[in-house]
Image (tube, rainbow, N blue to C red; front, side):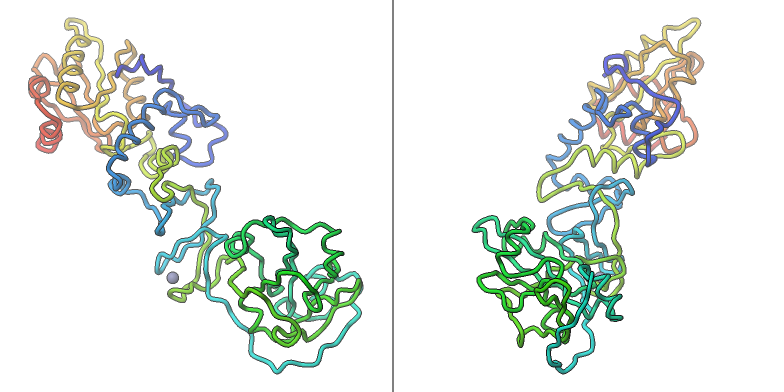
Length: 405
Ligand SMILES: [Zn+2]
């Protein structure tokens, strides 16, 4: 394709809103607008990646530092909207809301007799633990929902120091919504002071740490009161006991015992579906230097950035056109910068756009039957004969030629 046909607009300066270098170069090289909308070059590149994905393993040839599990492939980037739990040691990778971790149980205790205590203004775990001078691990946190399928009241209990993962809850019982004040009241529970003890006709589901946690402080279902020494099994039981809580950075990996990290990522594949916009960003984040993108073959939208430098005696543009046709006939994709711009402007654009090979047709070399060829990741130009390019018969021949010079 020709540069002008794609209407490529490069920019000297990084956009103000760029939070990563990869995004910044995609905007500067004209793949994306500042508003993160694909330009024609961007669309062309996405279509190219889509074609490559006919080979389902195509992503693994791009040297991207991905992390993955059986269903998803992720790329770590600070601006990523997804959080995953990752074990640097055994590579366990899972979305934060679904990640497993090894839970720490407290020392086992003999169940003590229940005791109702006055706890004014203690309608949060924080306030309750402070008021009683106990760690949050000794409290039971109550969360109440309504089951969407059958309107059943759902009472969830997790240890007070942990956060419920609604995603995990939904895996066990399907969709829920927070219970309304009226629903809580008619269940017999008291908001802020709730416990499942004594409730009838509700679905009780507890985190699997609860049966191993004795003498927890729970609500007394009465405003201003809690009950000390509640014990699962003696005071109440649940229809479902399951892992319901969310992992945090620093939790222990349940596979290998090492410390888990929480990192921001974008998703590149979900099952067999590819997310091409994210793949383009991952390529840009991984493959760039201070001058622009350094996209690898075959991820780059074009194999070759072809340009001519206007001559005084020779028609360099016509010679470049000859190479353009010959390479395309040989199955090499070419972006032909056919503008009458200064050489420096074109060199800068070539570096920004990041095709693997730049070919420059200039008068000086051409007089000796040569053109300049520069791999994007190398510092120096090489010379290659004009006829070796125009005589190519296939793409492998081209890449072999580059290896040899
Ligand atoms: Zn691990």
